[in-house]
Amino acid sequence: MFKTNDYWEEEFTEYKDKYLDAIYFDNCTFIKCDFSKTVFDNCKFTECTFINCDLSLAKLKSCTFNDVNFENSKLLGISWSSCVEPFDVKFDTCNISQNSFHLLDLRKMKFIDSLISDTGFEECNLESAVFHNCSLDQSVFISNNMKKANFETSRNYLIDPKSNDLQKAQFSLPEALSFLSLLPIKLK
Image (cartoon, rainbow, N blue to C red; front, side):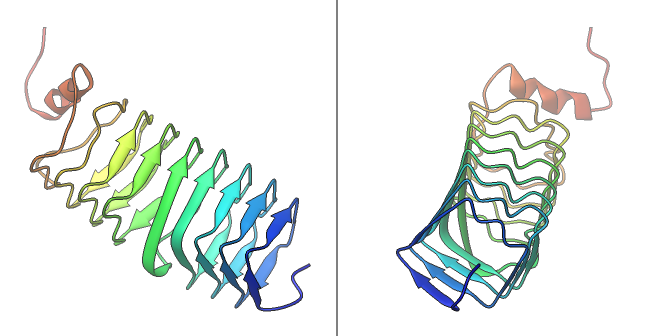
């Protein structure tokens, strides 16, 4: 469906392409697009918004997402690790379950009102990241910089303070009691 390699300030509704190669999107909006199982190869998205889209099981090869917003979208089973910097994404009311964020710079990233189940955050820079009203059931946090990260309104997280740098990170009760479950103690 995409006929050129460069799009600026365009709106795409209900597209269903399954292979996008070396396409640059600047300030574009995608509405109700089905990009599930799509291969994105060397694509660049700058100041773009995805609304009510499905990118589940998409393959991202050397893609750039710079100042990109995902709203009310489904993004299941995506590995973001092969993305090229800058990587600046905001998830608002999304399902980003079974994703992998490995070795990514996620400083100041915003996860808002989202389901982040069974997702891996390994060796990421999550400094000052915000997890606002998110459910993080079975998500894994290993060897991350989480200084000043905010989890105050999120729930179902299990973060090992021994394997993550949590200096000045923000949590609230009763969810912060999950840290006790990682200690070799018995609570009664």
